[in-house]
Length: 332
Image 1 (cartoon, rainbow, N blue to C red):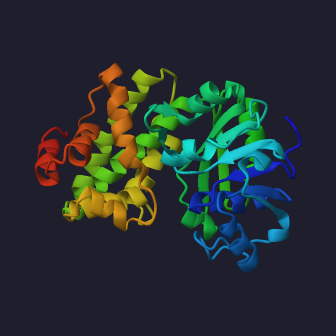
Image 2 (cartoon, rainbow, N blue to C red):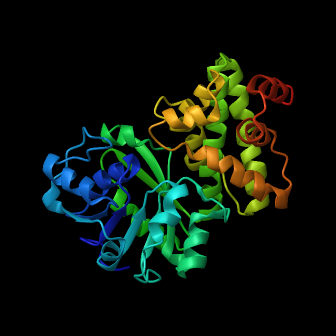
């Protein structure tokens, strides 16, 4: 693996991208950082923090090479860490002309490419000819807000090339962040989508005043549903209780920092889907994930009552009260 010092690029300007930049700068002397808007870069340089996200985190901007041109950022970097919302990934990549097949691509995106219904790594492999051994993902449980506060957190690096995952882990490991490695790239990618789906349902139930007892049963059924889907979509030995699966599900479903839970809570309180989306300051990726997985599951035909319930609420505009009541009858 090439020397990573000075050649790691953060691709994106949101809260998770900002948290990742903070992490990488704790282990590397400098980074490159791609942000689409030149004005955001100018404001960042002037204020010494990201003006739009995690603004309490200060940066030494002398250690950051900013780029508003995605081609320049890619050309001058060896490792590209993508942290953009999945619905906008294609938009960001439309201007990419620099070949990236020889780069190491790390996806920190918790979603699926809409329309194509493709996992992020599959999209890079098929559309940009990036070899599978150069594709990795970083998964939680890990909220950006707690990284900003340097609270002890854990992440998983997954790559087909396990040695490469272990090499990448050195970029992320510091005194408040522990890393582990595995090879279940697709399984963890699917799990990262599904945990957002289940967090929206947990939020809906919270908004409807269902209590902790019900939430516990909901999530017990959710992790079983997740395992059924993963075992059908990507057969590989895995421990579904590991932090990248169960841990990420729990934090996304319960945490006050979870945008998917917040979105669901608004739905449960009576907001329309459109109104809840307009009032959200950040993307709730589970909204898109519910449709994508629902369509993907037409192939696998896995029994997924929680996913189907959310799809009915979000896309069929069915009554949350009626759907959740019916869903509750399926739980054990």
